[in-house]
Length: 226
Image 1 (cartoon, helix red, strand yellow):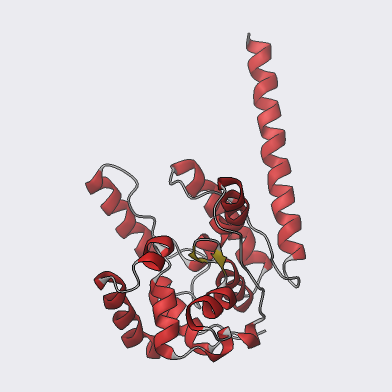
Image 2: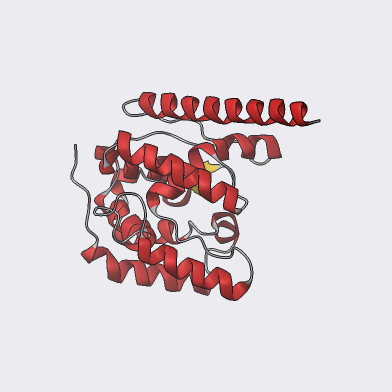
């Protein structure tokens, strides 16, 4: 029995190492190449939902309004941290302790990207641990500008709608580079619950968050373009 347990443990370690070697290899490729598939997109396809719509666009093809809205809403300290917002994590821990469950994550843009690319939606401490490790890898291999570009290209904006270009075309019939401040704020405000807000575009919470993002966009600190 002990020998079997040792073999099982060794197998799990090998699989864990192989997974992270694969993650590292993909991150090296995606340093310069478009990302046209993620774990979230794969899971969506397997669920039998609407066909995936996603078109990769480079940094220059994304309106600065979108970048400012994303940082203002999702990660105000994005340009300055190393992948983790300590204050946000502390606040999330307090909320989780009060709720008696994992109800808040305190995730940065880098952490959300790690999850979208390689992991799964369900919250757990195991997933958060993997998310943290992959976040470190992303921050080491990619520039901040690349992280933000990738995040905006793979984020979910509705049923089968992935990336800011597909979202801009679907909701406003225009390219991502032409989005106004209000349009950008509206799309970013959808991110916590995009499928619900797709069906309820006049939801009061969505409208209120759009206004909050609009007020904060002017102070958003953008990363240097590289």
